[in-house]
Image 1 (cartoon, rainbow, N blue to C red):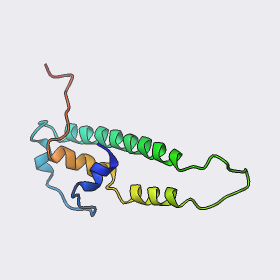
Image 2 (spheres, rainbow, N blue to C red):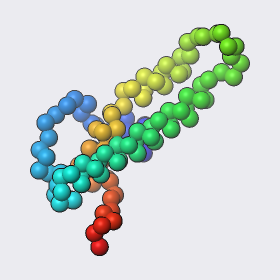
Image 3 (tube, one colour):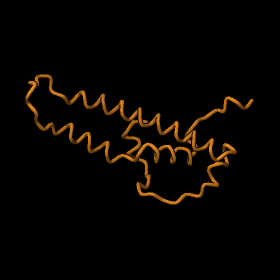
Image 4 (tube, rainbow, N blue to C red):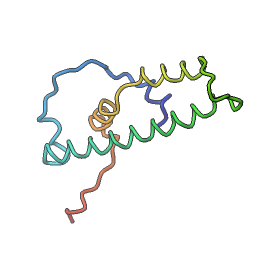
Length: 109
């Protein structure tokens, strides 16, 4: 997913108490579920970082002198947009709860 897709999701940004018993239904083990969500959060974070770096390079003027520091409005707006997105852990939790994560246990046959 792209950051625009994540922005459309209705995810509550505040901390909420969760019932942990519902997280072991699919995997049979709560800790496996946590590992799956953790790995997905890492993937989401790296995807968002890569997308941010690609978008931020488009806004950097090419004719900069070494001492000159100035404000780039497009870059500030881009940073604000990424700051307002849900955190990768919240996104991974949402995806896991809604069955959007594909995982395979290599130890099970």
